[in-house]
Amino acid sequence: MNTNEVTMDAVPFNKYHLKLIAYCSGCPLVTGYVIGSVTIALSVMGTQISMTPVMSGLIGMGTLLGMVFGSIIGGYLTDLIGRKKIYMYDFIFLTVAAILQFFITNSMQAFILRLVLGLGVGATFSIAGPYLAEFAPQKNRGNVVGFLNALWFIGYALSNVVCYLMLPLGDGAWRWMLVSSAVLTFGWSVAIRNMPESPRWLTNKGRGDEVPAILAKIGDNVILDCDPTIEPEKSSFTDIFKNGYGKWVFFVAAFWTMQIIPVFAIGTYLPTIMEQMGFADGNLQYLGSAIINCLYLIGLVPIFLYMDKAGRRPTLIASFLICTIALTILGFTANTNLPFWMVLALFVMFGASNTAGGSHEFVYPNELFPTQIRATAVGFVTGLTRILSAVSTFFTPVVLENLGLQTSLYICAGISVAGLVLSIVMAPETKDMNLSDAANMNNSAKRRQEVAAPIAEDLTQ
Image: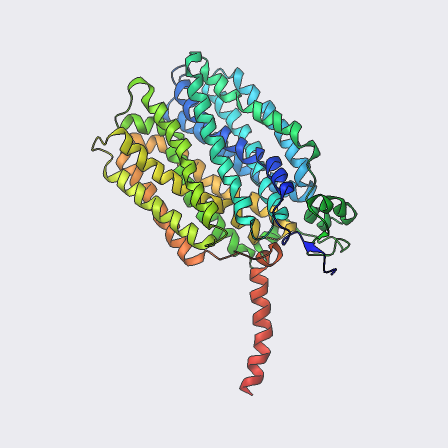
């Protein structure tokens, strides 16, 4: 290698990386917005359209259920067709689906359209994460890819603020709340036309001749850490379970699920929860929900300071620990009429720590799997996590009605405890590893064992 050459993993973070982040920001921003917009809209819709607690649960979980299929299919297509193409097709699809929500006349239509939206939203998880991970410098990869989680929460918080401001629109306000995501999806579908394809994906598909022009935009003498002229590496869907990757599928799916079950269960019905805690006067429950979701972003501060310095493992463990403490206190004090500000503080403590831990949902799966199956693995894991999160969101209003708020909060705390134990036992450390080495941790360990075996045998003879 020329001494002046530098690999994509080693190139210093620069303005072009910021441009790539801007391209990718639409995926998590829209995902958070679409999921968050139903929080207030569902509560308002319930006063205009007849629905049972079961149907309310179905509408609340509709997007999550759609994501199960959308993420799995979208992940496979993203590895097969390309990151950029799927991005553009997906956002056009989301724009149309969002607009159709304006014409909802009954609760079943609302559920079906939220399900359809989930198909498109699910695919976004398989695009932005793999794409940014394949461009990001290894010293900044945790922050760069983890920032996508920040945008998810920004989108979620933005939807709560926008929907709150739309309340004065009257009986039909919920229609505008649901349709508002079309502004974002259409805007990004236009903005990403000049977005480059991933050089790693192009190389893996035998299109290495297109790579130099893209690398030149990143910086001078930038090269891949692999030969762009190599033969394309064939893969199948089942490869995500082979060569030790099945272990990572389980780990990522498990810790991700234990993070999102509490946040979706609580977040989707936060206005209702605030009402049960005694804050139903003057739209206080909606104001509290908007404030809490905005302040969740506080959790991004320690992640940006420590994920690339302290590492992925300790920051994941710390996030589950703080979530457990906050939810336990909320459960213990649920029926004690705490002051409004104190309830807000405890929910923010939970949400902020969950936001911090949620950055690992974007970082870990994109580091632990290789290019040829990266989006497929991310999509499959996303699908698995959405099954349980959809079920939990569906049952939340039923649990709240039959078991009460305190028990519901204790259940969420127990799930966080399980995530804490899992992280202590299984979480790997990928800090300061280039993308190829991080994705081959299992293979590297296996090779070390193969090399060590004959040496040990010789020493015993």
